[in-house]
Image (cartoon, rainbow, N blue to C red; front, side, top):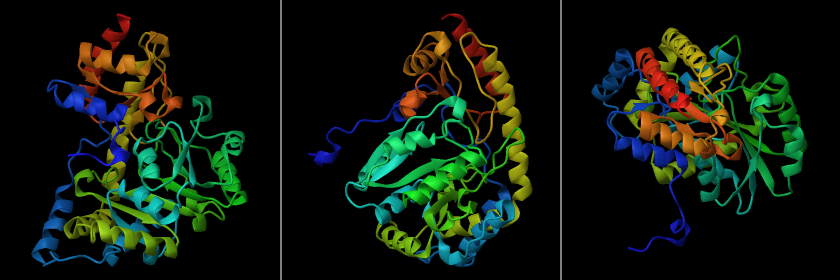
Length: 384
């Protein structure tokens, strides 16, 4: 059967190719998957089951249950001082659904979106899939992988419509400073742009850092689509619940687009997510502490390895070590490490040119298995 021409040259990303290879190797210590290793708390599961027993087995409201949207609003006000009303929220099928809906609602053919490297790989395909043009903005580690304003100005054109921000960052695990975000906000206002701020890792901040909600910067709420969800914070990746805060007219259009794709989001997952956001604050803190301890331990091991340098963890559960001292490219390092040591990581080049020379490590295994993987990686580096 002949595929549509738009798919004739499509190839799996560097990230997907590694995932596919690991699937065929059952003994791999897998540090490539950005998913908490903790299972969903039993009382959250019970809340979903309770919804089923109470008869919530029909189509849900297209924007999401009011209680789920209220829970999202309460969570963000409680944790970050961000205030929104439930009619400024749309529930989505996981966080990854949000950019697709956002670009569908906001982009005209040929509109450009600034894509800050290193970036979460699906963003690029989502922009293109909605008729937009991704414009990659290179960044540097010494700048927290945040964009320099002069680079944004150089990349801007009359076709530039918006910018994607992702702090804490995937893959870098870094966070932008308030000054950096304020400079971006000023540029956004000057150029009349919108911002998709992916803050899915807001609950995982380390080393005395603090999460800065971009929409809280003066003048930015009306320009920002704030994307988040319960996948990472509440260990609910399989429940597929995301949510987005945005101006009402944008929310309304995103809901229309979502309705023709999914006709609502899983009712039982919504019930579980509402319960989770209302009751699990202490559990979220406990798990963040565990991730922080893991990352500190892995960071120390990495910095003791031949040819490897690793910055201190700041956010998310990712480390993004510089492996240029090994003499290998990020692709070479990744595939040789997988083949020789059976340790799975992701090449930084899969996340844009600024990721070359780095690898992404997800600290989503137990401490014991993380240390085993570091033992194997250390031996691998010694042999270079």
